[in-house]
Length: 204
Image 1 (tube, rainbow, N blue to C red):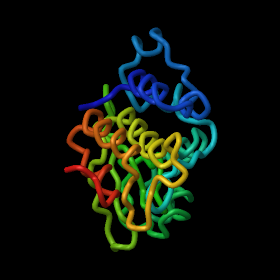
Image 2: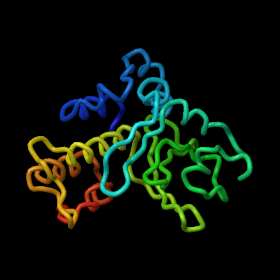
Image 3: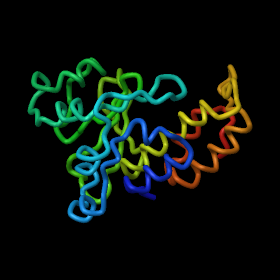
Image 4: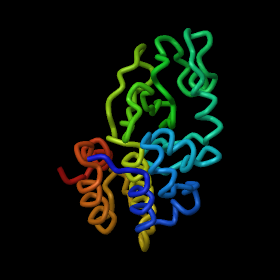
């Protein structure tokens, strides 16, 4: 279930002020009506100006700012010409495909969209570094859905009224869990397990 960027910003605003502080939110009916390309909308109107970190279980998710994404959008035809950002994050340039546009990373694990899949929605993928090859798997049906999920995880880890929302065994405190898991089940769709299973007590 894909979520468009307008829906994503509205959802995020409903539980957090992150959208107002981080995303540019320059979407309007004119820009959406004339451009149904989600990636272009994101880069032109929503993507933060500078890199932003979102708290997660383990490594934070770092969303690349507009300038960083633009630097990585240059087509490359060999490992030697690959964008410097990819080299810094992963140390693994070999077999990096020109089709992969880096938009974020989690502890160096790249998070991408594929240029060949631009359209009304751009699915988001992630892969683990250090394997000697890239095995990208889908984590969201759209950039909007990806933004909603990273913001929801951060909100749960900073849930109002809880001093310690996560215990040593990675169980999410009941109040935060009772909000997060139903929220993700509704909005993460087929990717619910990908996002919720980082918590030991996630509800299957």
